[in-house]
Amino acid sequence: MPFDSSSHSRVDRSSSDKQSGSTAGTTRRTLLKTTGAGLGALAVAGLGATGTVSAATPRLHTDGKWIRDPDGNAVTLRGVSPSGMNYLKQSHPKSITEVLGMATADDWHTDVIRLPVTEWAVHDYGMEYVVNDLLRPAVDFLADQGVYAAIDFHLIRPYVEVEAHAEGMVADGWAETKDGLGFKWDVPTDDLLRDFWGAVAPEFAADEHVLFELFNEPTLPNWWSTYGSAADDVNGREDSWLLWRDTAQPWVDLIRDNAPETPIIIGSPDWTSETQFAPVHPFTGDNLIYSGHIYPDNGQPSEFDADYGAPANDVPVIISEFGWDPDEEFAENVEYGTTTEWGEPFREWADSYDNMGWFAWAFDDTWAPSMFDSPGDGAGEPWTLKDNYDQHGWFIKQWLADYADDSGGGGGGDTTAPAVPTTLSATGSTTSSVDLSWSGSSDTGGSGLDHYTVYVDGSADQQVAAGTTTATVGGLSAGTSYDFSVTAVDGAGNESSDSNTVTAATGSDSSGGGGGAVSVQRITLTDTTKWNNCEYSLEYELSSGSGVDHVEVTFADQTNTWANGTKSSSGTPTGTVSFSAGGTEDDTYEITVEALDGSGGGLASHTIIDVADGSNTEWTA
Image (cartoon, rainbow, N blue to C red; front, top):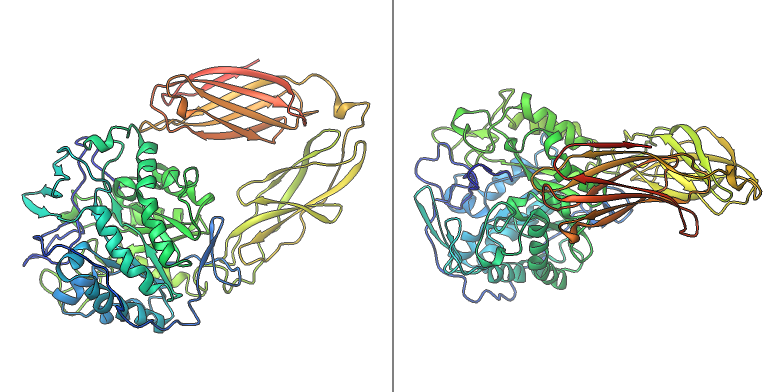
C-alpha cells in the first residue's frame, strides 16, 4: 500500500541486499540485483545453538485484540526496522550488531527491532547462512539488550503461481521488469516460504523474545490488477484477502507446527494494505497478529482508518512499516511527505489505538525513507540523525522516548486506573430487561482501555468491550427496581471507581413494560462506499423500546448474494449498526430494520432500497 490507481501499477520503492555504486535516491523497492543460486533443498539440521532470553522480554501471546505478557499485562510493541540483514553484513561499513546497538541504545527506547531478511540472502547464500550468520547473532544480541526481535521474511512478490503473462510479470520463471531492471525468481513462492520458515521456525521456537513476520508484502493478485487465471475469482478487495488467506494458511500452519507459541505477524495483498478483512475472515490459529503498511501516499488518517485502524478494535494490529521523507528526490514516491502535514496526524491516529504497535522504517542511512544521513551517497560513516523538523528520524526517536516509561507500551508498569465512566442512564426497559447508556472512559496508564463492567445491585453482571457504551441487562424480574453502575477496566486489570448509580424498574406483567405497539419511525443510512467496497452506517428509531429485545438489520444485496449480511443491536428506541459488505459499487440493497421480542417474534419492520454509490438515504414514517 498504496498504489497508483490511474495506471494500476505500483510505485517503485523496492528493497535489496545489494545497492548500486551510487545510492542517492535509493528507495526500499530498488532491486538492483541479478539472480543468484537457486534455493535447491534447504532442509537444514542443527543450524545453531538456542539463544539466551532476557527476563525483560517474556513470551507474548494474544488475547482478543490485545498482545499480553504471561502476567496478563497488555503490551504494545514500538520500535524500528534497519535495512536488510544481508545488506548490512555484505555491503555496509557498519555491522549488524553495530546498527542494532545504536537502535537499542538508551536514548532510543525501542521495545522491538524488526530483522528483515530478503529472498536474495536465501538465493545467494542458503538457509544455513541466513540462520547462523544473519539471524542467530542478531536475535541473541537483542535478547541481551532486553528487546524483542521480529524476524521479517522481507518478500515483495506475488503470493500465487499463475500461468499467463500479466502486469509485466511471468509466473513461469518468475520474471519481472521494472524501470529497465531485470530480475529472475527461479523459486516459486510456496517453495520459498516453506524452505525459509521450515528452517527458521524450529531454530527460534525456544527464543521467547522472538516474533515472526510471515511475508512482508504479498503483491498480486489484488482488487485492481488482473493477474492471469489465478485471479479469475478476485473481483474485489475481499476476494483478494480470501485468496491470500487460503494460500497463506498452510505457511502459518507450518510455522505453528514448528514453533507452537511464537506470535506470527500476518500481512495481506496489495503490499499489505487489506488489514480491514482480518476480523471478519481471520486466519486459523493462536497468537496471530495482523499488520499494515502505511505511507503518505495513503492519504490522511481519515482516509485509511477503516482499512488499518478499525480492525484494531477486534484483532491485534502492528503497523510494521511506515515513514516519510520531504526531500524532493522522493517527490514521485509513496514515502514523500512531511512531519507537519503527515507525521503528526499519523502519530495522533496511531496513539488513539491503545493496542496498536508499530515498527518505523528505516533505521538506516541508505534505504529510504532513511532516518540518518552519512557522507556521500549513503552506506557511509558516520551516521547523523536527520533532525530537520519535517524529517522523520528525530520524530520517531522522540515518539519512542515519550513512551519510555510505558514498559513496552502496554500494561507491564501500568498501575493507574482509567477515568470513571460518567452520565450513566437507563434508556429503556421491558418486563425482564433494562437498557443502559453512559459516556466513555479513557486510560492514561499506557495499557489501554480494555472493557467496562456493568454492576446490578453491587454485583458484576457483564463485561462490555471498550468502544461500546451501551448494555442491556436481562433476566430481571418484572415490576422490580434495580440499582445499576459501571466501571472501566484497563489492559493491566486496573479498575476505576463506580460511575453514578442509576435506579430503574422493569415493567410489570400487566403493563407489558409500558405497552403500546412498536413501530419503525425513522431510518438514516450513511453510505460511504468507495473503491468497490460497500460500507454502510445505519441509524434507526423505534416508536418505543417497550417489549423489544433487540433489533436486526438485514442487508440483502440484489446483485451479489455473497455480500448479504445481518447486524444486531440492543439499542432501543434508537440504535446504530455498521456493515462492510465488500460488494461492488452500484449494487442495489434491500435493507430491512426489524424489532424482535425476547422469543424472536417480530414486533415491527420496515424495508428501504439503496444503491451503494456513496449517497445517503433517510426515511421517516
